[in-house]
Structures are given as structure tokens and as C-alpha cells.
Length: 462
Image (spheres, rainbow, N blue to C red):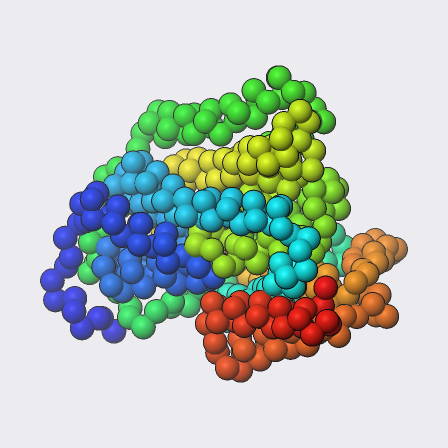
């Protein structure tokens, strides 16, 4: 079914028009990747009709395959489709800019006043809302990706692999992609449906009725030399600060650790923001000791309540890590530099992945085996997000979490005697608000924060 207002194909937007729209999307990009992708779809596909439904979903599935935040990468991809490299840079930078400013401001507040009972209670309430929102994202993505038994099995296997056996993200994603690719090549119907996302909006806009049309844009056919030149520039911009820090400060310095860890994260963490957060939480808390599990959840609460990618929480992680090991710098100066360094090495690679890979992926939009591989990856991501939800749930609801090892397994288990009744009450309320009352993200976050403050005032919390 075509939209009612598609009698005339929309004109290709000017760069100024695109700038205004990308700014609007950036300021509306609350609520994590699920909400951000929905906002982009509503504005770019349904409202502006700059890009068609099929092309949007193909780009989204490709971005889900990449390491890093898929929402920002989708912005870069579509910006590049519309206005070449400059369009991709504008879209990608604008998408993260509000989050950079907001998270930095909140990091200062947290560092200066985080131990005040009132502030602690506020973040105590936010943690309950964050857990409910992650579960909501799990349901939303799962409802689109798990369209048959094969996809459900891939998601279940991914969860068991990461939660029970602690298998690395890249291996899980690579295995899912291989299963999808081989399944499609062998002709299994379960892998033949293409993209792993159902329609995201009310209207189905055909590619032919969009400003981009059906054909591959001329600039999406760069020569190998052009693609390599742009990729080389992106690579240097990303890694030059890392090399400089390593040469001047050496291994073991907090800035070097931040640069190396988050650069490695940009390469090995697949499956979008929620998948990345599982890896960051485990390493930043367990390996580097930059912050505690509860503080990681506080940072996620900040990211959920501010515009921009959810993975902007990494800026808070870098801020806290440098704040607590400032060397000869003032702690707040060190924290600021640590946060900005984290943001740079986290988001700069996204431009490399898109500018290098998008031209080739555009030419493979009709490749059934590739589409099946991308769909299988999306299904595996559901299992990874479930792992994140369980990890968060354990640390929200229980004061102590133990690690069980044996028989090849390594997984977190709760110490049941340490269940926090107040936290359980807040989580139950947030779940009812999200799944029963269908309240919006802002309402749930505000309500949970207010509930945390009330519990503090009556002496139950803090």
C-alpha cells in the first residue's frame, strides 16, 4: 500500500534542508536506539520521503552488523546517501553533539554532588526505570527480528553463549551471520525473508517514490582509490590521538588505557548500543575498576534521559575513570579530557565503517544470502540485549552478585539474601508503567526518579 500523498515524488533535499532535519533528529533522539531509529524512520521515510522503506531497512540491517552504535551509523549512512561524504559527516556529528554536551554537564553534577543523599536517591529511582526501558527495547527489537523459529533459536543460542559460557561478542555475531548466510544459500525458507525488521511505521514508502529513488546514487559507486583515500583519512583521524598518547604516556596510564580500550571496543563490539553496553559494563567495572556496577547504571540513566546515542554513556565511563586517576591534573580537568577522549575514539570509527562499507552494501541490496546473514545477526543481538537486561537486573535488585564457574560455564548469579525490597518495588512499578500503562520514556524516568526521592525522604533509601 502506498502513502496517500505520494502522487509527486519529492525533490532531492538541499544540504541546508538536510542540515535542519538532522538537527531536528538530533534534538529528538531520546530513549535509546529503538526510539531514535523510530524517529528517523518517521521523519526521513514517512514525513519527508527522502528514502524508501526497503532501503532504510537494508541500511539498518547493515548498521546492526557493524561494531558500535547503529543509530548514529544509520544517520551517517543516510546522510552519505543524500549528500556524499559531507552529508554523512554532518549527520553523524550533529547526532552526537547534544549528547556530548548533556552527558558532560551531568558528569560534573555527579562528580560534585553524587554522594548527596538526594542525588543518590534520584539515581536509585532511575536505575529501576533503566531496567524497564532495556526490557522494552528487548521486546521491540525481538518482535521485529524473531519472525520464525530459526530466529528465536539464534537469539536463544546467543544468550546462552554470552551469559552462560562467556563467549566473545565477535564470535557470536560471526556465527549468527554464517548461519544466516548458509541457511539462505541452502534454500531454507526461514532464512529467505530478507531484512530482520518489520515495518517501523504506519506507511510503506516504496523506494521508487522517495527522493533517492530505486537506483544506486552515482556517488555510491566510488573507485577503489576514492574509497581507500577517504577510509585512510578516517583511520588517521581516529588513531592519531591514540598513537600520540601511547608515545608520550606509555602503557598503564589512564588516558592510554581509555584510548586503547575504547578503540578496541569500536572494533570488536557488534550488535548496536545495547550489545556494546554489555561489554563496556563488564570490562569497565570488572577489569579496569573505573566505576562500580551501580555507577554504570547511573550513567545509563543519564544517557536515557538526554538526546543522542545511548552509547554516549561511555563518555561518563571515561570521565569517571580519569577523574579517579588524574595524575598531575585537577580531577575535573582529567575527567573532562577522559570523557572527550572516550567520545572521540568511540564515534570516530563509525565514519570509517560507513564510508568504507556502505558503497559496497548498496550494490548488494538484492543479495538474498547477505540479507539473511544480516537478519540472523539482528536475531543474535536480541540474545545479547537479554544478557544486558539480566546483568542490569542482577545489579539493581541484589546488593551482592556472585560468579559461578565450572563445566566450562562462567555466569553471574544473585545472592538471594541480599535482595533489595525497595529496588524490587521500584522495578515492578517501572515495568507496570512501561508494559501495562504504556507510558512514555520521559514519564517513566521522571516517575521513577521521583519515587526514589520519596523513598529517601521517608528514610527507606539513602
